[in-house]
Length: 255
Image (tube, rainbow, N blue to C red; front, side, top):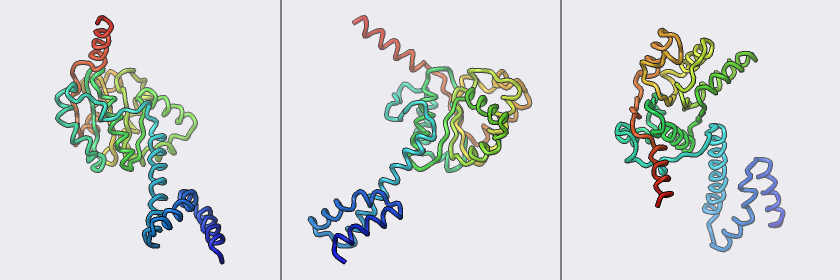
């Protein structure tokens, strides 16, 4: 069998085995090996490395897409010194993602515009990059989806899927109050993850005001107890990020 036949057979095997990166880069890798006089072992290692790298990249992109982030926010974009003191003190620990490994929750609580959503999304993106499965949604949208799934009798399948996420981010708890059905669905689906998988919640309400959203003091007490047990509760009260940016922008207009 001549070299051309070996090359064609190799591409054919790569296709059948779904080794798309090897198939695409085979000719270039052979030329590189010949040019640099690579050993068989080094040639094979480099070829497999390309396959591995492209698969890792594709899996990461898939995790980022399925997480449904509304936009990309990164730690590098945070103005650390402008964050509330409690966030500054705990950000390094949170960014290690050890809370995900331990199945702990994170509650970012404080007035609007102080960086709660930015931190939550940054943690979610970092988790995706490190191989964790993440799901992001706002609490109002989450409740709406749960109601729709319940009416279609497909809630159980979603709950099974939700239980497999390493991290669920529930943003904007407290912006819109819920009816009894929505509150019960929210309580049930958060409780399913308690002590097993991590959940991040951002809220503009102190715990003693959560009953305003859930409308049931017993349910509120139970949910608060489960969420805060061995969790990181970050005080995000401080000067609004957005207010600072608006003032800085207005200042440039007057210069």
